Image 1: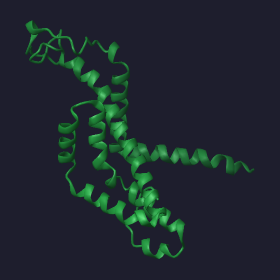
Image 2 (image 1 turned 90 degrees about the horizontal axis):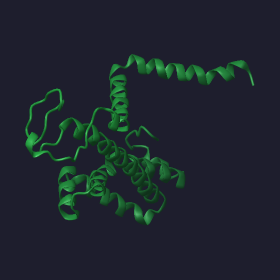
Image 3 (image 1 turned 45 degrees about the vertical axis):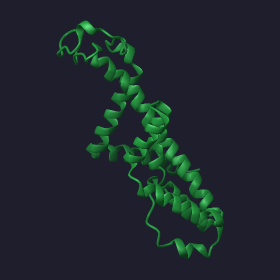
Image 4 (image 1 turned 45 degrees about the horizontal axis):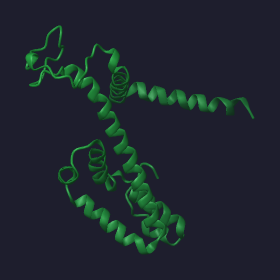
Length: 194
């Protein structure tokens, strides 16, 4: 192997870092995400108290030295609730993203390889996309009750079709299934993951 071939991956990594440094929006988002993950991991060490501890005597206090963000109507420290709430927000967001991609990818692959399922599955996907996501989430939480699992499912369900995974996997698998179907799917919109 030549010396130029060994250096090629390092140059590519360098160009990715250079590109990230030039894009201030991406860097801001990355710094914000790292800060949120750090706050979630280090929550007990960030001058917090028990976020569920009730203190009716100290209710509705203004921000100060003792309670940095003040207290709510039950006397709970809002700063502690915010820091500990970061954990739940990150778990819900990560689970919803991973599940919507995985389920959409699986549905798309099945629809692309099994022609009998293709039309039915894609019409169900169209139906899910026709319902506003917030309405579907409210209905699911009203029916199943408020829990972490219900929130993850309520956010994941409407995100499966628009995640492009179902459509991308369908087009890709249909193209792999038969060369003749490639002509049919050439007019499909560009997919960032295909």
